[in-house]
Image (cartoon, rainbow, N blue to C red):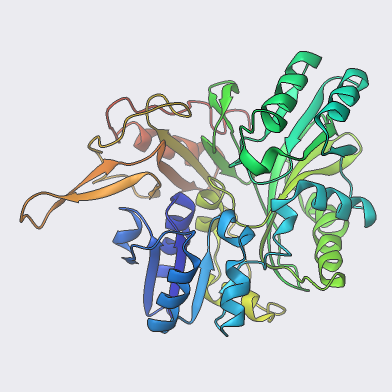
Amino acid sequence: MNVLVVGNGAREHAIAWKLHQSPRVSELFVAPGNAGTAQVAQNVPIGADDIDALLAYARKGRVDLTVVGPEAPLAAGIADRFLEAGLPVFGPTQAAARIESSKSFAKELMVTHEVPTGGAQTFDSYAEGVDHIQSAPLPVVVKADGLAAGKGVVVAHNRQDALDALRQGMQEKRFGPAGERVLIEEYLEGEELSVFAFVDGVCVSPLVAARDYKRVGDGDVGPNTGGMGSYSAPSVWTTSLECRVRGEIMEPVARALASQGTPYRGVLYAGLMLTETGPKVLEFNCRLGDPEAQVILPRLKSDLADVMMRTAQGKLEGASVEWAPLACVGVVLASGGYPGEYTTGYDVDGLQGLDDGAIVFHAGTMAVREGGRETTRIVTDGGRVLTVTALGPTLDEAKGIAYANAERVRFKDSFYRGDIAAFA
């Protein structure tokens, strides 16, 4: 079948890399893609938010399955448009994607269906939010209700930080419309965990877990980023915990969405906190994580194209979804200055001759052809540039391979965290 992947990050490169291995895939396209996706697929110069152009391309190219990577087009209704046109699509409808695009919707759904989560109140009024913060127990969590590219959450350990976060979201419009409504939540303590499942509206696949690192510096210091690395699977991810998360969180949420007439089809991503009383949901996302996709897809033993098509068709029951008992570690190489201002256009060196077991997924890269030469240069084109990933029989071995190869890849002012999976 012909498959179109929508997006241009390392997540989409990982999806395309895995789909490329499927004997079911004859033609593979990525829109718009990057220098890495061009090595396994044909890049198509259409932005991930240009739904009209993507739909026209899928029709013209006789695309059998479209896989949507990022959350923004899902929140904008790309799946609805494709389904209306009779085209199979992997990713939830706009209504089901509210599980990520509206934190207040997700919180209300969880409370109604008794899914474990922290207490929260939603505010449309800045003055009422201020009043609540003045008396709320500390620490307190302030969240923009809508999509804020992973940067709309502040854990405030004092009232002034909480008030600043509220002001930035509601008055200064730092996150645009996403911050016009704000959730003020109970602070949960414990270990964080990212859990993923394929969901076809009814059936929930075997789960897989990862842990990611959001802050820019070693030891979890500095500002939040889109993610500086991840690993799978954490040692806390046991069979008993998987059963509990499935029974208390993933299956109830799938049933709840279906009961509302908005069945969820795609990857359901639960961000959890493992508290003393058990796992509680911090947030849901309506797609694969980035950088988590880069460490869970290499562990998938099953045919990703088959799994995604069955999910899109509501036929996941009985499908093989098997995760290899291997460890995987991913280290993000970023541009100097990220997540603030940074410069692009620097040559990337060291991508050839990496060790067996190492995989490099591209994010902010671009291929540049000079003059009439057949060869191209890979240059930086973003803040998060690459994820150097490695599989191994143990976490220590995978980590060793990942870091040994991350040291070999260079571009001007590049940096990475040195503590990914250090305390697993």
